[in-house]
Every structure is written in structure tokens, then in C-alpha cells.
Image (cartoon, one colour):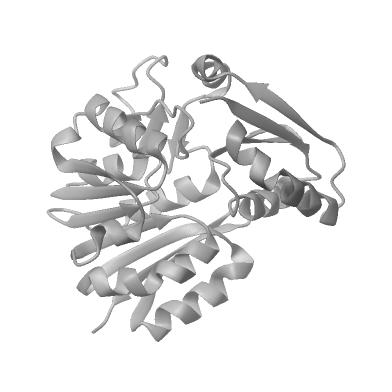
Length: 278
């Protein structure tokens, strides 16, 4: 599959975060920042169906400096190797690629991720917020669901934090295979089951903890399903939305008998943790 890299010149980090949140409603699969340039990656075939809407969206924000660049699939790993630096989180976790030198002395855990067009390397604020929230959550022996798993980085953190098993769900076939590869690389394949599809693929199952780093609209749509699957006292940790969206997320969770127990914010993005109270 060939991809297109959309280069967007943004005014600041706040505008970059807003644009990422808007583009997440389209089939963009990864985002990176290089100074004032936001780079968004989308399958070439998928762009044909939404390019007009994407351009209109950027026009609404007064963004005229943008450029579409085609990337052949075989060049993707080389692209990541040139831009992917290790990420340190909370002084306890380091996320690196296979081509970085091991850091066994670092913090509590070292996670090795090769993204291959899947979202979730620790570079985006929402992934960091999710991991920070998980470090404050008891996952020992828990049954966990990772919705929108991407690279599987959150699933791997859950296993390294003692989770008994993780169902890792994503609608993208590349994320599905990439999650499995990264689980194997990190010695977690026996406790992580990648699942291709959406929340309907795990309907009827029950979990102690649900992780969901997606976008606001999908979270609001699927939150009733998460509530159905959570055990009493189970925890739902969500990110992928801006600080301004927290009241809407909070209202929807409270309507489903979930009590807020965590709130984190970084670079204009938020993560919220709720406990189910049946």
C-alpha cells in the first residue's frame, strides 16, 4: 500500500493539536511534528475520497501552506528511522525502536516499537498521557481491552504492569499485524490477542480495565459498549480528545454510572479515568 504525507505549516502546538483532532475523523493513520510542520499520513487510495473535505477543513483554519507528497510503502521504515527518537515517559518508561541502542537501566520498563504506519510511539501527547495514567492504575492480574490499539504500545505496557491478558482491537489491518509483531518483540505475545475490527468484535466480553485512545466522536459513540463490558469497579481510561472536550466526555461517562478518578493534561490534550459504579 502506498501512502501520502500531508505537510501542514501550523502556527503553534495548540493549532497542531486541534488539526490532528480534526483530521482524526478521516482515514489518517499517523501524525508527526517537525518544528512548525505537522505531517499527517494517509493511504493514497483513502485520500481520494476525502481530499476535498480535508482541504476545506484546512481552509476554515486559514491554513494555506500545505503540500501532499506520495510515499511508497518500501520507504516507510527508512522515513521512521530518520525521525523516530526514543521517548521517555514520567522517568519510568522508555519507548524506542529496534534500531536504537537498548536502555536496560532505564526506569521500570523499556518497550520496543516499530510503528509501520500504526499510531502509538509515545511521541504524541495522548499516548504519553495514557501511559502515565496506566502507571497509576493497578493492572496486576487484570483482563484488559485496548481499543484502537495501533502499534500495541498500551497493550504491552499493560502486560509489563502485570495484566493477565489484553484484547487489542483496531479497525486497520496494518495495525492488527503491527500490534502482533510488537507484542512478540516485547515477549508479550502469549498475553496479547490482536483483533481486527471495531468494538462489536468483543461484544459480550467483560474486562477489568478498558483503554481507549481514539477520537472524541468514536469514544462518545462507543462509551455505552465500554460500560456494558466493564466489571463493577472496573476502570475506563480514555484519551484522544482536547482539553475543551473533557466536559462532554465527563457528562457521557457520568450518565453511564462512571465516576471520574483521574484527569491528566498535556499540550492541550487530556486523558480521563473513570470507575464503573453499578
